[in-house]
Image (cartoon, rainbow, N blue to C red; front, side):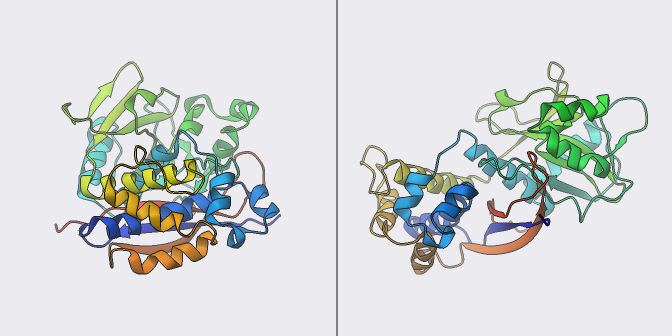
Length: 336
């Protein structure tokens, strides 16, 4: 089977949030689309493809996972790094340079994350960034391993424990990375774990950096966690955008849990959220893709701009790649 491409749709915030209902509608659209394309491919094939799946069918086919919000956080941090958002970039660059001794002045991020359906296990944005001389720094004495050489093996190691024995000892736990961050001018990278809950950070050979949300009332300074052997870099959220994004995610989850009907008031007590859920309930018998188009005029104009790009995909469980899509939030860029 020939290599295929994963369609990566980045929803970029264009304007500040105005009317709450239209803002929530704008965010719910890509979340619904992401939920649709996260369905397992064998289930989609059985019903004739994505175009024939109604909202009612989506609610019955979709199986929520504990890591859904965490995946959104991974994508947001990755995107913020590459668009040079100072709220994220400055902190990560400081952690890379001051704590991890990564040389260079051209920071970038490579997304190495797992897709929950089990079909796609590596979103490979590395081909356009890594070279044959790209090295991964692990903090040990000796010549750093060449990252590009081991990318496919790291992907396979995620699902096949026997493959992990083929990895060099210095990077034997690098398959647990969510991102690789580094500097393209010096071609040096570090394995990075991104967790929405700091308690989920785990030590692993090859991982150097842990990125987590800053917690209210706690210090957001970067620090070295000696127990986990990680440099921990707390990242402050763009509260205006991420709050709306997670509210939209909650609307979709409650709507699906209610079998594509209007959830009980206790599930969505706020009138703006219920209004958006009502938009969906009224259209439960229509195909999801048609509903997305129908909701477009009801969305806040200019809140989100969709940018689509194709990235190579490596299956961590099999040799063949599968076609799919990923939706990622992108916060409003502030004036510098």
